[in-house]
Figure 1 (cartoon, rainbow, N blue to C red):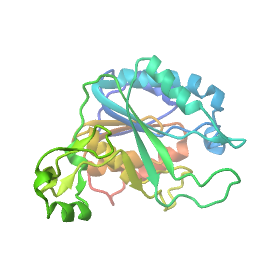
Figure 2: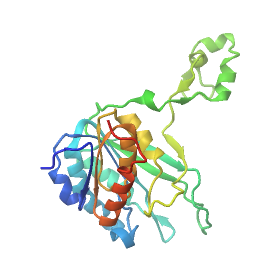
Figure 3: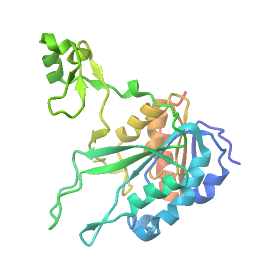
Length: 278
């Protein structure tokens, strides 16, 4: 059984072999982006869409074992297009994870503000990816105040001139059943965000075919963990999640099968250019 002897830990090997060596109920957050179906064939071989669920379910079972009952599992994934039609493997995976015991708590969308340009005969360029939030229990930790955003200037301007009826809850004029009390916005400098994250993709060369920006794991680390909590990335790649863990004083365990990426992640995470953990 692997012990967490160091706050930042990188383990080399196939996560299907390494995960069973980790202690049960020990991880606060799993944040990862596995190889998408038929993607990264030159580096990871590629898993066909029809085999993806069968391949991923044993991994998911181990992830559920090592996750604390209060923890969260955030899966960054996106279905591919085959012969002009979207593949169903992500939707099939969601259903299979639910059937195996996971709770599908939320779906976040990463809007990629600088998505790669292009032209296709039957669709527009892909500008978003899924971040699926799963939990073991309905009672999980979530620090919503840590990701608050500044109140929009238009809202501040609106509440500066409230009328008499704005001080009470009014139903929506569309008869939708929703209502709001405009005065509740008065004096609020920060508000809760939506479940859509507007972040640019990674523009710099991280020597990895699918490195995501640091701000992506950073947002979820702030939402679901506190300093000292343990974060696991079973498909570590170039180590971006570990790098953010070091900066935010979270403990980290990363698993990666390719030796070259192990070396790259060690260089990034343990570089003297970044502040030490604790």
